[in-house]
Length: 259
View 1 (tube, rainbow, N blue to C red):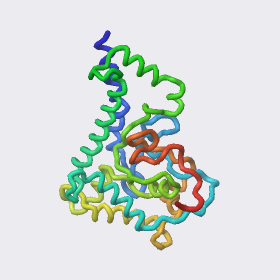
View 2 (view 1 turned 120 degrees about the vertical axis):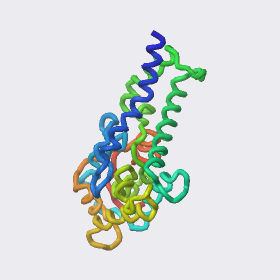
View 3 (view 1 turned 90 degrees about the vertical axis):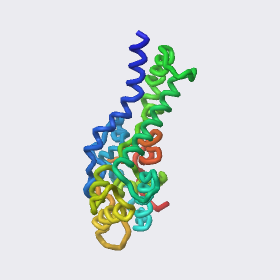
View 4 (view 1 turned 180 degrees about the vertical axis):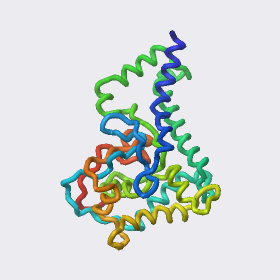
């Protein structure tokens, strides 16, 4: 019985994290490689593994968001590259990208193990497992996701704030994942350089920038997503509702003014 409970505990600790792996083959949103179909979170969070689903801001809000300059867009792209370039050699390979994602996932698995292992003896016994399950099943945790909604997405997102323009910028930039790496690698070598990633993302920007003023308006960003209505579901990162990589929790607020 004890061995069975130990195996169950291990499976429950790891399962939500490994649920992300099929999404590695499903990335391919608008512009030739954004994250699409990477669901796996719960409830309205619909994309806690990183799947944006319907990412457009709610309809009916103010339309006067301060446009996003190309320079800010390129800075967001560079922030993703710097995270993925773990060995700081100016190149991001697929193996390097996967090592970053695996490292984040392993760190979260370890964090969960420590939380369940209440007496910190390196083992999870029956009492600890039952106590953890009881907390996980509580009404409060079930409602807001809490610690159990922490899932690492299979992509790297720009490290931005939680303001309305940051959220819009997150929608505009294609997250760095296997598809983006493959398509940006125009010289077909071992990996991509920052220049290659910037060129790939710049093509996306230019396509959306319909009036060619080197800014993206709210309307242009909405058009990138097909003009679909609905809130922007959070994409899980190192913590519930976003972490370093995903958008903040609570959906995308109406955009009025700038930050």
